[in-house]
Image (tube, rainbow, N blue to C red):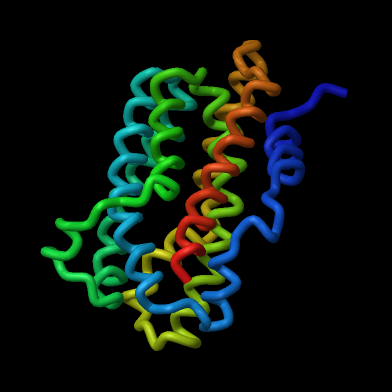
Length: 218
């Protein structure tokens, strides 16, 4: 039986799910045991990640077929919203603009957006659709856990948790666009499943580097 794009995305997400032990920080946050200074660093790192990913997604959109372009454009628009939501979280962590401007990002945290930029320049956009869709599943789960913990253990307001709420909530339109893009690529023979899996594995590894780097600060 011919595999559909939906089957492909679901199978890849299941097979490439990160090891639960690969993220040392989120469990600490979930228990309220992470130092608030680490939360501030998380906010500062995201100030670098979000705009970099947005530009990468826009570049992928320019290189894409219409279905993939719609997906990447939606991702870029989401990053714009995320950047606005990040501001109250950053403020709640006690980070003002002079401190943010003086901050030097950590290499282990910035390997992820660097690789997304590599994908924007080098990957077949259809393969990048699958790889990014797989990775976003883990990211959304982490954000849901953090959003709950910030309210429960750290006394953050709904406004200051909005960044994590945004990524934690289901995104059926985005899932639909990813499926449509992958299906068109499958139908036209433009999707290299093995290569897309390779991209997804690297994204998951760089995601793990992000959290492990922050975890070393605890």
